[in-house]
Amino acid sequence: MPIYEFVCEDCGESFEELVLGSLNDVECPRCKSKRVKKLMSACAFKSGAKFVGSGSSACSGCSGGNCSSCGN
Image (tube, rainbow, N blue to C red; front, top):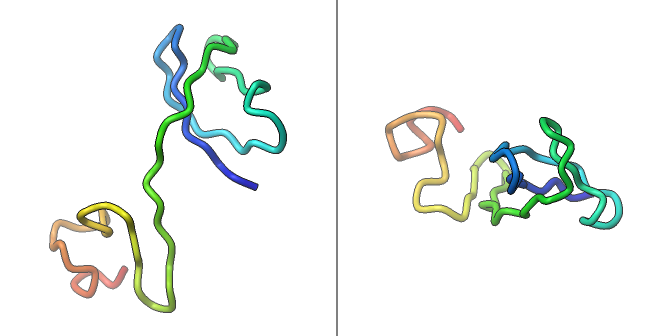
């Protein structure tokens, strides 16, 4: 079951939603508007003991830039 990121076009609220069916059923948790836009999300996963991400810096848990420095 995918979790998508959305932004409301009426109030600007950013939120995540577990989508079980149609994307047309998603509404803003703040203002209840159905005018929401799906955002592009970065993909990341854990492979064994290493964290693998799609961005330039896969680890955002520290400023070291090397995940072996913080254990993630």
